[in-house]
Length: 407
Image (cartoon, rainbow, N blue to C red):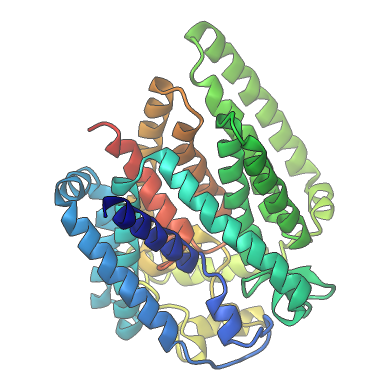
């Protein structure tokens, strides 16, 4: 009976990860709509599924209340940020949206708490591997057998989006998938061909999605993984090596800064990052109108009836987010929210370094890798603190895991 319950709980976890990945449901319910298509669809099924996940998560946390309370007591800055999002309903420009979004943020963050408190890092990565294996298989089926859904043709050319509504969604998830299989393949000696196969397929889907920024993020994360391994060396070898790496990195930075057009051309981007650099100054102007507390969590992007109308008029197109996680957080919670996030991030990041230094396996590098991914991806995407987002949930789990293993 106990094995059945464990199997059922793992099944619930994988199904929840799949849901939080943003895969399948929105794409199917919208009828495979493109980026520029305005399609209304019934999302009640999605809301029901999320409500069930929320309820089961709370029950599982209550059943393990000691670990739950321990992690809550060690995560003041993280949960202060989440509480700030909920409290922002007081000054929000759209209180109903803030109420709905903050409710989803609290509950999805609780799943991150559950994921960290219930599973070891090794178990977390194996469950993520199952989740991404399902996504990879279904993405191939959708793209090959159901191209209306799996291929995004409205951007020019035929770029794969798999089981997501946009090719960048597939690209971002395949970065996490690639690094998950990479760590598992690096650590496991038996049947590691399965994990390396998953890594190759993830990288292939990333290339088929033509997501240049995601490809760069993956390359940086792989290099970062080996750099974190150096952190375990003795000081007489570690310090000189890190100095050399820092020097090379600085040289590359200056080279790329002077020849940025070469890099953009190599990844199929223009100098404006597909209009992002033209959008950001407009967003910054709006941030400085309410710099300290922002417009409330989810209170800014309300179309022509909200404060986003200024940006839409000035930009000449209708973005639904600023394509930058830090700007999105400033719009939602102001400089106060951004400051609380970075304080919590650096505390978790430093604890991650301490944990890596005292451990031996590749699994133990995972929290640092994902936190690094969050920082990188937030430069061009807005999912830094997005409710019901796998990236945010795994950030919560990663930042809590480095505290969990000190019990």
